[in-house]
Length: 391
Image (cartoon, rainbow, N blue to C red; front, side, top):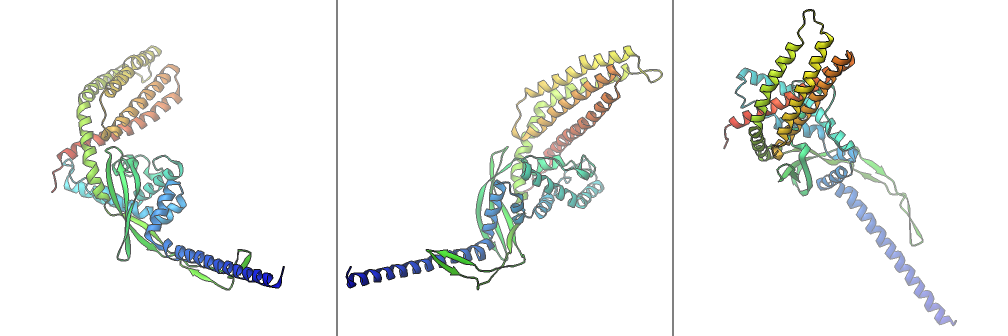
């Protein structure tokens, strides 16, 4: 190879390496710029918070979800919207009683809010709805938590996607597209977001290798602000309830009307059977004879339980609109639990088993709780029909 050709190739190699270095510098600067934009700009936007929370919700990532969603604040505000007029139109209450109820509902707000948080967290972690324990079990606080959840629409509201996000002063507002499953009603929830201040973190440099060249950035330190946006409330939750609830209440009222004849007829039957049941167990000394116990067991087995099943079979023949699915399911639960309670009572009579009687008593308490829930739904439905139209 002559000297000219060698020099020419050497010069070409130098130019190629120079271009590679320039490209590496450009690529590094671009990557560095993207990282700076991502960490210092994009992650500090409400849009990022909404997208991250939405993805966390889909992936059941409760830790990330709660970093961007303030469940205690949301549930507390939603509770206020949900109970705003709970007793307002109940004519069975005096003004004094209504005032006492309203004040009491304000007092138990923290416990109910925390219970809602626990229920939502369990749903995100385990994929099912439960009822909270502790003081919220049953009606220890004078409120049926299961009914409250049903009124909230949370168990049958499906998130469809995210809408626009915009700044409102020093806060932000984001749209969440949802559909209420029973009615198929689409709705846009308006979520409020606030900027939460976190402690900042300092990241040092390091050594990066590109195209066989090592780039040292160890002398550079960057102080990253770790503040983030968080959803703190649903601004138009009450509007959502006002749009969907009347439809559900009308469907519920129609179902109650359609089943009223069956219910009234069997209520009369059950009252008569209860009188017979009590009469058959009468004794002089409080102890039934073996023959008497067998007669009572046979009456329950041949008359009372078949009546319960017949009532439920007739109810099953009535078409159930979506707004009444909850009530229909409660009636179904009541029939199953009541039957099991009577079966345990029969076992106790025939086997003289204290354990069977205890089981029957426990099941009876469950059945009474379900029946009380049914009665409250029917009562609230009647109150809703009398509610005046408000322009």
